[in-house]
Image 1 (cartoon, rainbow, N blue to C red):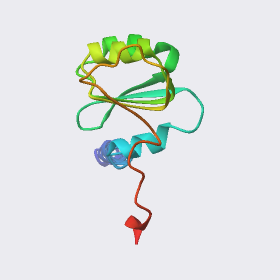
Image 2: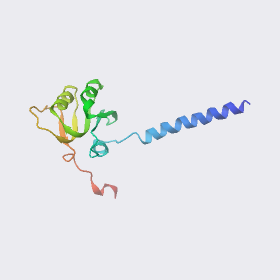
Image 3: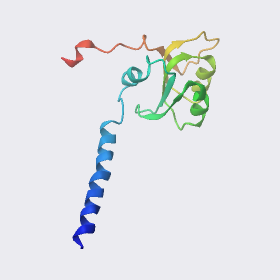
Length: 132
């Protein structure tokens, strides 16, 4: 009977470690370009806030984005499947974001110096021969 509890415990350990390994393998895109490819273009209004290592801090809808930026710890970059507004740009700049890549940009009355703003089309395109 002592063997019976030992086997389920080891099976539990194996199943617990398997999702962790899967999470590590599917942790998400590793570059800003990868995040842009993953987020922009679906038209679903997704915004993804990234840390300095391009890890996902949070993903949200555009209408909640300013609150998410204000609550984030040391955000670095933003990828936005929609139009970047002056309000979002101002909030991003006030919280130290270095990069914003959006599907499109609106007209800006003021553009912060410390935050680089690009559209997905302006970001360097992926190299088609990189896979060969």
